Image (cartoon, rainbow, N blue to C red; front, side):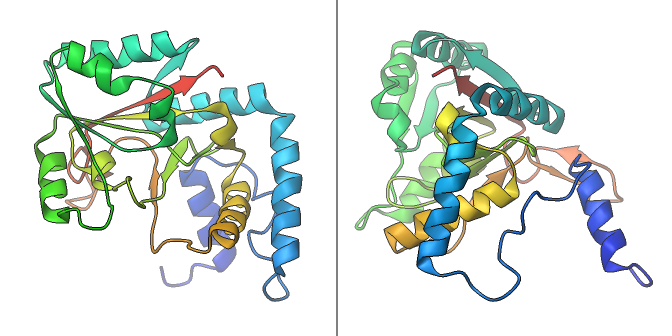
Amino acid sequence: MPGTTRADFISTVRQALGRSEPLTEAPVPPNGSPSLAEVEARAVAIRQRLSNSGPELVEALVGAAERAGWKICRAASPEDALDYIAALAERDEVKKVVRSSHDVFSRLDVEGTLRRAGAEVMVQSRANGVDLDASREEAAIAELGVTGVDYAIADLGSCVIQPREGISRTTSLLPPLHVAIVEPAQIVGDLSDFMALWAADAQRDGDPGSYMNIITGPSRTADIEQILVVGVHGPKEVHMVVLDS
């Protein structure tokens, strides 16, 4: 807006996100790009700090996520998580489900649980040779999308999904109901933590990807007459299942 200073603009954004303090560290050093060794060293330090703050991070994530509009399940066991997801499918009489290929599904039999509940489960992929149009159509007709996450940002109540082979953004964007499964080791404190760890991962993997999804509650827009409407451009209802361990 005309006459708005940079400091005022940043303050307005911070208030909208529910933040009372600035980021603890700048995501990028002020004097040029860091060396590869510096990127990795910073990531190691952040991971060490986060490992000593596990319970506090979980509580912060849950609180911020609830304020952002997520419905939260604190799952004390894998069975609790599966029961919660099955209950959602039964509540909405879900017949078609699409899920991502995050690693968490090798430890959590979401597919088998939902099939026993009477739903057809499609596993979405971005692998070479897959018909992406057909994959999007599968997600578009699904009533429920279930994903893991790559990170969860505690102070924002956000989940981060990085599309890649086996993980398509449509899984979390097109179905009207989205369930995101979060493991404690994926929780970071703030956006600064996330950007530093993402940079280290991209350096290690050699492919940062061209985009990512940062999901903070259900889809919403105020484009029309500045009236907030939920569920226009994506899921109307989002659930975060936070695994105990």
